[in-house]
Length: 224
Image (tube, rainbow, N blue to C red):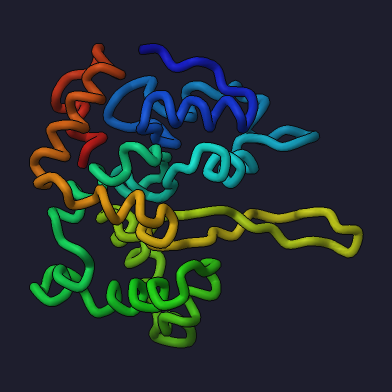
């Protein structure tokens, strides 16, 4: 399918729920990204909100997951499809089991445990709470991306600084949560009900219907 033009956060939320998966930037399937369906004037508008400001409202309106899910690049996955996506990427492991089997690093554990204990945190708070501050404490962004790619962390919103007149300014600061906290029982009840292979097969079948022009290899690039 050809993606429709998106000119408002409401339209973005509707599209996410309609197609299930929407990478932010260009990827293995030509034409299948938010970059391809938002007109240029909405990327850095002189007045009003643009695509960067739509992210938080789109998450809230659609109930989706947002994060670095597509080859370390950002994108949206609907509430309906994220349990299968996470099951596939986690290979059926919850985080504790993955760590116990030596498949997750101690840096990943520090971030995951800090976030799981709190429920939700802004990125700067999570960095501090998980010990990635000060000299020699590098690796936070890379480790956080790895946890998102594996389906253990998602972005729930973006929050902005406020000036003395009550106006928002600057880039939004990501607020993170585990999918278990973000989606609640709906996610926890569904994430491991299938084998990872079954979840992968369901996603491939769905993407094949959404993107009939794409090859199997291109679709695998989305699946990861």
